[in-house]
Image 1 (cartoon, rainbow over the protein chains, first blue to last red):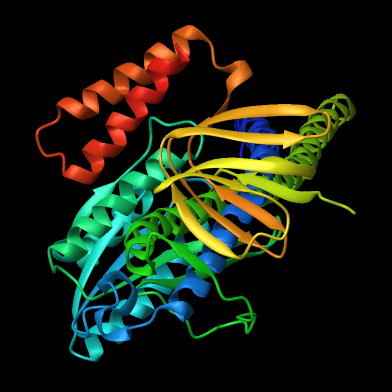
Image 2: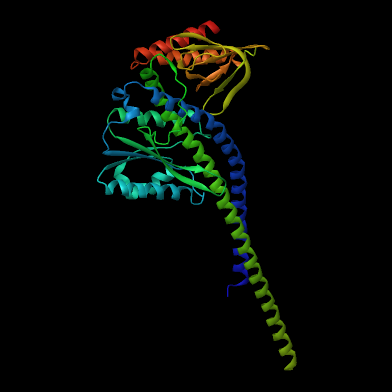
Length: 290
Length: 130
C-alpha cells in the first residue's frame, strides 16, 4: 500500500488536474456559445448562395460550354481531399472522427486506383495524417493566429483550391469537416464541392430569371465565391463542433477526476486509521507486558 | 395598393439587414445602376463597387458595397455581399483606409482588365464619398 505521504501528493495532483479541466470546460462553453451563434448567422448566406447557383445552373442554356467549375473536367482521376481539423488538441474525438472518415475515403479512392492529393487545414489533422499519407499532402494551411473564424481565411483556402483546379492538378474536390448537431453530437461530413453536386435538387424552379450580364459571366463570377462560401460554412461548423466536443470531453474529465479524488481520499483515510490503530495496539501491548 | 417589398442583405458572418417596408431599392449592378420596385421581374445580377440606396416611407438609407450578388424573386430582394458598410458609420479615416487598399490593388502587376475596371470604380466611388 502506498504511504500516506504518497497518497496525499496524488490527491493534490489530481485536484489540480481537475481545476484545469474545469477551467477549460468553462472557456469552451463560453466560446461555444459564440461559435454556435456565428454558425447559425452564417447559414442564410450559404443557403442563399446555393439557391442562386441552383437556379442558375438550371437556367443555363448550353450545357456543353458550361464553366468547368460547374461541370468538372470530365475526368475522374485525381481526387483532392481537404481535411479540416482544429489547431488545438484536448477536444475529445473531434479530430480523430474527421481523420477516421477521411482515411476510409482515402482507402476507397486508392482501392479504385485513383490518385490522391490532400490539403490539411488545421495543424492537428496534419499531425495525424503525415505519418501514413505524408507524401500525398500537398499543402498545410493553419490559422493559428486568427482568433475567430473569418471569411477572409476561408477565401484564402478557396482561392488556393481554385488555383490548383485551374492548373489542372485535380478533377474532384471533397472537403471533410464536422457538422455541428448539438453539444454532444458532431457528425463528420464529406462534401464534394468540385464539381458541384446537384443531385439533391429541390424542385423549386418555377421562376425564370432575367440575367444581367449573361448566365455564363455570372456563373464564372459566382462559382469561385461559392467555393469560398462552402469552405467558410465548413469552418464555422467546425469551430462550433470543436468547442462542443471540447466542452463535453472536459466535462467528462472533470467528473472522472472528481471520482478519483473521492476514491483516493477514502484510501488515505483508511490507511491513516490503520496507522493510528497500529500505534494504539503497540502502546497497549507494551503496557500489558510490564 | 401596397407598394412595399422585402429587402434582405446578408454577408458571410451574419444577416446584415432585413427590411419589410421598402418602396424602392437602387443597386449598383454590373452594367449600370438599377432601380427595383415592387413586382419587378425575377432577376439575378452582380454588383460593382457603389452605393445601395434603400428608400422606405421613414426615410432613405445608403450603404457602400464593394461586390456582391443580387437576386430578386417573388418580391424578395436578396443581396449577398462580403463587404458592406452603412454610410452613416463610414467616417473619413475608414474611407481613406479603403482607398489605400484599392490603390494598392491597382498597382499590382498581375491585374486583369475586369479587375482593373472594378478597382477603378471603387476608387471613384470612394473619392466621391470623401
